[in-house]
Length: 215
Ligand code: SF4
Image: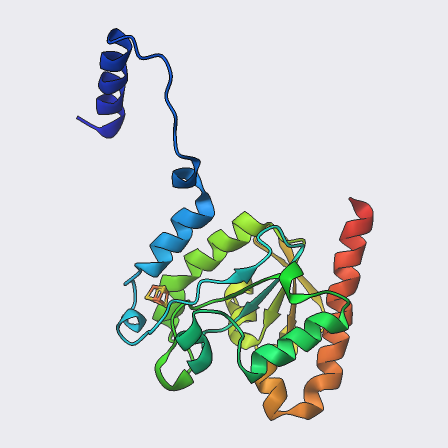
């Protein structure tokens, strides 16, 4: 007997006993809680073995702009939050540069667990983990996504093109506009790229403002 049939029988038995009202705890149906629980227990790739904390994502779950990074680093793995180290501080400054606060956007990574030694994510790890990111995008429904780095851009756009071919234009994926820029950690290593990153952030803000005006 499947669960629908057993539920039907239970409800009929309770009706026969005179019970007319049922209360359902809404949190059991909260898609964010369901997703977080699933990710926190995930063992779909080898990274669960070495993680200290799952880094689910943070911010406004109804944000108009969503930032997508690559994977947690050491600090994020310890604290369970995305972008909390030096790269996180730079991301906060990039967000402020487009006249927003961190709490007004949603931030997540392609991978929810840290690759050992901060190595690049393996293709099979990305394949295993990306459905969680896509579900987060479905739930947030951002107007524009800003992909931070080649891995995030490539995962969202389904391409292996280099970052230089993805930057500077507006893409469309998962029902949403996507702007690709440098990962903040790369900007810390290469400060000379900040001017181009600023152009990307202005493009992101323009797209967001344009969509806001058309609403
Ligand atoms: S990285 Fe993603 S797929 Fe791999 S164990 Fe962590 S949550 Fe699961």
